[in-house]
Amino acid sequence: MTRSELIQKLALIHHQLTTKDVELTVHTIMEEMSRTLAKGGRVEIRGFGCFTCNYRPQRQARNPKTGAPVLVPAKYVPHFKAGKELRERVDSD
Image 1 (cartoon, rainbow, N blue to C red):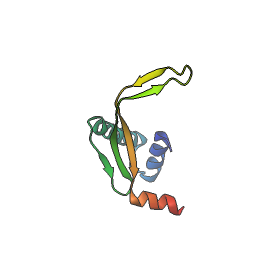
Image 2: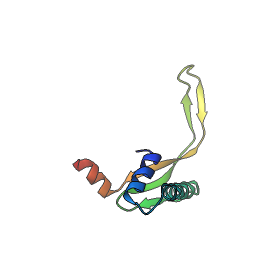
Image 3: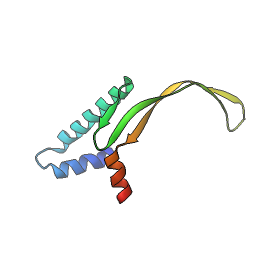
């Protein structure tokens, strides 16, 4: 499901809200989640899952085309861990 599909679905479910209102709400939620993760925080949505940032240390890699060694810098990457309820729903279907 894409962001625009989510907005359309929510607008259909909640007739009292305009599509612009739903779009603003979804944008605000995504923006706050991104901002929290960028600060190193954690976003937990009960029944769905938890978003965190994992640290990956600096490492030596190889360029697949030339075989030359390349230094990959340390970085933080987003990580999602599904909640129990979500795992059970996906597994049962």
